[in-house]
Length: 91
Image (tube, rainbow, N blue to C red):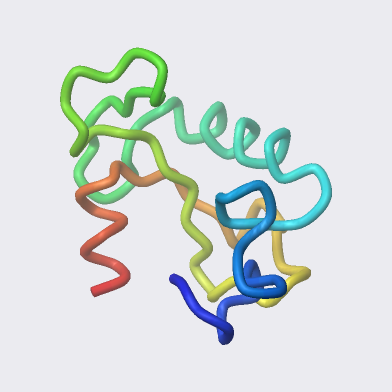
């Protein structure tokens, strides 16, 4: 998820020091979280935001089913995962 082959990688780093996922990304991912009722679609755990988490494995994440290519932020390609399950998907 890092390096020059990642679409979020721009000129040696990523936009605002986090993965850049295109215009409107923050609104899109909130729509995904709402649709999935803030639950990980893999394990069913109720996910937590970075602001109020007590267990980092439960941090809410938005995952691209088909890898991000710069333009595939459609809702059908996105799911809610907890950090633990998201890491499993990428390892």
